[in-house]
Length: 114
Length: 111
Image (cartoon, each protein chain N blue to C red):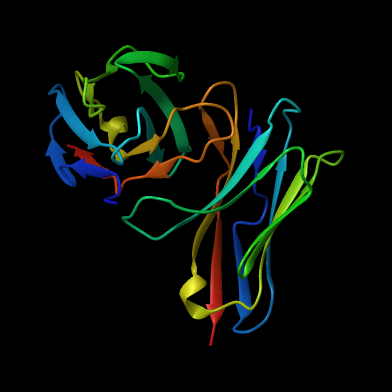
């Protein structure tokens, strides 16, 4: 079974631009979560989607948004990019997103904001 | 406020010996814990997990111990191999499906 895939792997943007990242979960998985990893803040939860609905949201500004499609693929969008948005963005999938269920991560998208 | 803490930024171990990575948490509502291994520029790879109703879980060379009263868990790797050198993250599952991560411990296994 193929793992979680994320595109693109690397991205360079300038301040003020917006960016869209894509994630395809493991086949059959319906829950997709997004995390941001930075040297200063570590790995932080952004949001989780299940059946095209956002079920859970972390403590990030409204510039960070996401959506999920009927095939469980997910996108996250960051608008009005700031230098501090430079990070590794990770997507994780799990079968149903219920309690005590392992999340499997993709390779991440490295975003650099100049 | 760090709810999951990995107080050792790094650990160096000789090949063949035991590696012990520690993790403390503050939220007594956490009921599921996971360990992930991460190489640079890659996503975290799941290693092993433990439910709060257990105190030990084994999978090959990896064993996780949970002490609920102390709010402490540890990952034991025996025997350690050079390929185990990576960053290890402890994570706890909060309400719903949200993972709260520790800061990570860099493990170096010397041959």
